[in-house]
Each structure stands twice: as structure tokens, then as C-alpha cells.
Amino acid sequence: MLEAIAVAGLLLILGDFLSTFFYHVPEHVFGSLHLTTHHSWKKNFRHYAILTLNPQVLLDGILGALPYLLVAVCLWTLSPIGVICGLLFGQFHVWWRHVISLGWQTPQAVTVLCKFLFITTPEQHWLHHQKTNFGFGDIFTFFDQPAKIWMRWLRLSRIYLRSHAVTHISG
Ligand SMILES: [Zn+2]
Ligand SMILES: [Zn+2]
Image 1 (cartoon, rainbow, N blue to C red):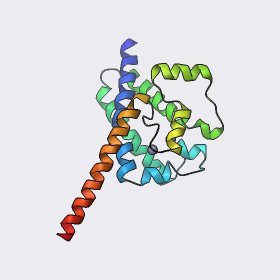
Image 2: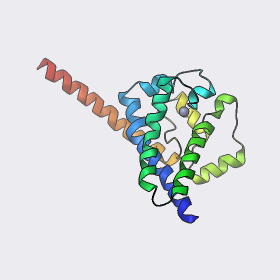
Image 3: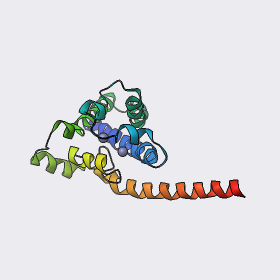
């Protein structure tokens, strides 16, 4: 039982870490798929919660979920039940963090519990939808600050790479 809970927690933490630092933030800096699909305005709940057959939305969702699946494969032998519970929680959280678009307001007690567990509430995730520099860490709030630093680094390296490319071409 304890092992299953530990494996589920580990899966979510490692999955969110890899997804945030190797897909979500780089995609914000270098890509456009996530920005044009997930951050597009005035879409409905099904669009944000990836309950649609729109190929671009699905691709963004699959790329974001891939790290969780990789971690799931690695942790499977430790506790299959833990892996399944972790994946189910992760999927549930994808739906739950987008319920703001259904007019949801998180009850105070749940907000306090989430704060205690460092879990991203729908309100915090909605902030990310509105201002793309805020509210990183799809599941865990402790990834927010390091993700912002990572984003600054990637932006600087993008500027460097572009200026480097220009001097190469002009030189
Ligand atoms: Zn979202
Ligand atoms: Zn985003």
C-alpha cells in the first residue's frame, strides 16, 4: 500500500518535471503548437481538457503526456497498482485543472489541502492560460519558480542562437 502511494507520487513528480522542463517550457520558447492550441482564447472545456479529436490539440496532449508514460514504464515493476493510480490521478488532474471554463470555483477546504500538498489548483492553472509566464507546473506548484528560471535561460539562448546564426550568415 505504502509502496503503491510512493510510486504513484514519484510518477507524478517525475512526469510533471520532465513534461514541464523538456516539453512545456521549451515549447513556449521555441515552438508554437502548444501556444496556438492550448493557449487559444475562448475555447471550451473539451478543448482544454483534450476531450476532442482535433489533431493539433491531441498532439499537444500526447507530447505533454509522453514523459509520464516513460516514467510509468520505468516504475512498472516496482508497483503496477501505483503506476495505474498515478496515471489515473494525472488524467483526472488534466480534466480538473480546466474546470474553470465550466464556471467552477474551488472550495476553500480543497484550496487549503492543495496548498499543503503543493498541487496546482484550477485557479492557478487558469492563471497560466491567461499569462503564459505564470503558473507553471501542471500538477505541482513547486515547479513554477524553477520553470520560470528555465524559461529565462531558454529565451536568452534563443537570442544568442539567433544572433549567432545572423553573424554566421552575414560573415
Ligand atoms: Zn491548461
Ligand atoms: Zn502553457
